[in-house]
Length: 391
Image 1: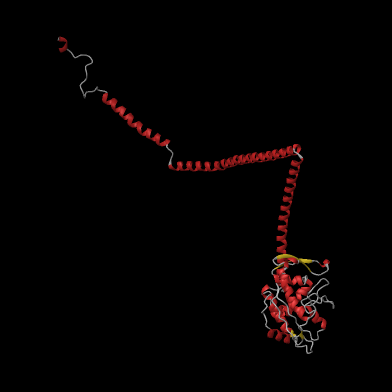
Image 2: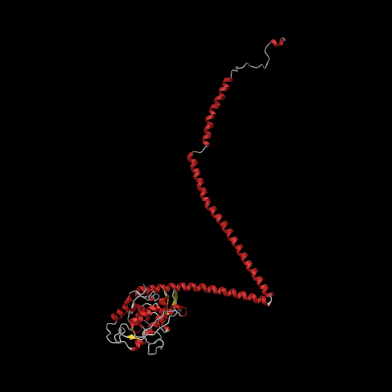
């Protein structure tokens, strides 16, 4: 008990709010040190952060570096892919060669160990395969050659038309040639009177009359009734044109081309006998079935229709490339012609030559030793009398 009332005990707790004499100073120093060190710390942190300008430069450099590395990566990828593609193609080619080798080996084994029938079958298949391959090659070559020849022929025809107003593939249109009603009898007679005005004798075509015969209808012409009394040239030309659907203009042109009968001032008997040149060579030996003016005119009109119906029997075909000679002499040569229509094709069947450049350059005159004039003269005469035959 005495002890509790004496001096205070050691280590007694200090009252709250009391401090030692040096406590404030120490506390201030610590506070001062903390205060002085904080700005330094912040300055150090700011120094460690890059500026905005520096950040942009670094970003730009990074992008440039990436862009520079992309082509290299792409090239590397392409090489890799190319390598893969080449490797894959090698594998495929190798497999194909392996299969071909295997098939050949199997075929050889069948041949070596097969019977006669097996060998015959193998040989037959091989021969047929070779024939098919050769035929295919020939077909392709022929097709290409024909395309080139056709283009050359058409180019030549365009050039001749522009230079000489003559197209060997389109001498006269079908519409002009097969118009049987192009002129009536009175018009034909007036034309003969005009063109043969210089002829004043009884032998003139415009005044002469001819015996006629009845002709039954056939596949080419309608019936020609005939007459007991001799008929004029105009009546015969018109009747033949109507029966066979051939233009009277064509018949008149042929009469002039072959024997100059329309404009002749003093025609001879042979000119009437071989008026259209049908089955009559250039002498006095005509086929009796076709000799005489009526037989020549009606027979020619019928023959033209026959040619149309039997074009495949002759060497000239519409809508095809045709080689047409310049002269009966083979050494004179010829040229390819694309024939545009049936009328032009039958003119070549009737007169199987085309004019060469010398004949065309001569106009209505003479060319060289290889020139022929039949189809050239047809075009000149028709154009002069009736206008462009190609319309």
